[in-house]
Length: 143
Image (cartoon, rainbow, N blue to C red):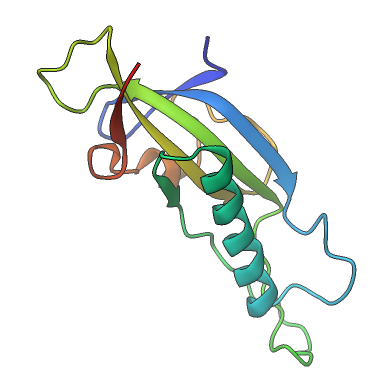
């Protein structure tokens, strides 16, 4: 049973089977949000998603980056990502039209950022998540 069902802009319904939420800067002990730190956060999320879901494609929805009018430190200007990191495991019907629906499904792990900790559902999700090109990004697997 899925946590929720998201309907992509293409009309394809995808089921959210697993979701991991965390505070974007929850593990930062020193420093400030800046491009080098944010790039490291993103790289770690992608590596973690690949380890947790081996053999499943991982897609990053590039996060918006804000630049508040603050003093730039030694690592450059302040650059802030949305507050919540999300790693979701999505499933849907098989991509290949001739495949048996009982034996095949398509899968994709998605990494994205959002301002709140709400679970995406229906058509209520971040626009970039709804605009995913499932047919290009996901892969079929045999059950």
